[in-house]
Length: 138
Image 1 (cartoon, rainbow, N blue to C red):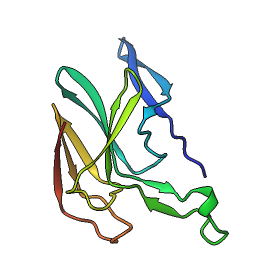
Image 2: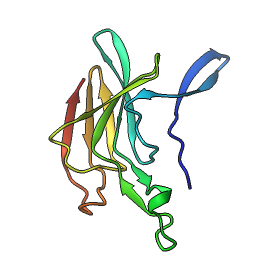
Image 3: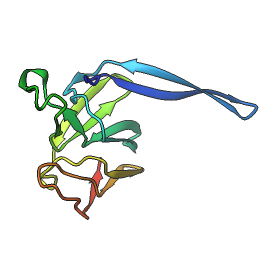
Image 4: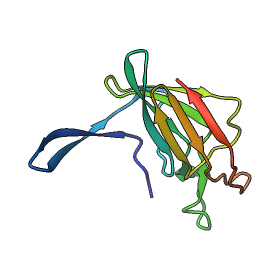
């Protein structure tokens, strides 16, 4: 049950006769590389004339060295870091925001221009589904 720590970028190659062709490109990241995860969000924002990916939340499997037979498929919330990803150059930088205390999985996120809105989600640490709405401006 290993998850990949690569990022996969889907892009439109062409459109014709009601048919859309996509390309999936695998990218290695440098810098603060987010751990492999699921249940996260990634949105594209446009700030200062550039587009960036904003990755937040999710869960990951406990590292192999810490697994036991009873807890082989155990998961943990990812740390509540916000990652800015430059898709063009493959650079990633993480940020810690004091408002985000616990990791959130399976939340909803929406991007509008240079702002991300995050609503809901679930935290294993507190076993709650907070009704908070977070606004992150990039």
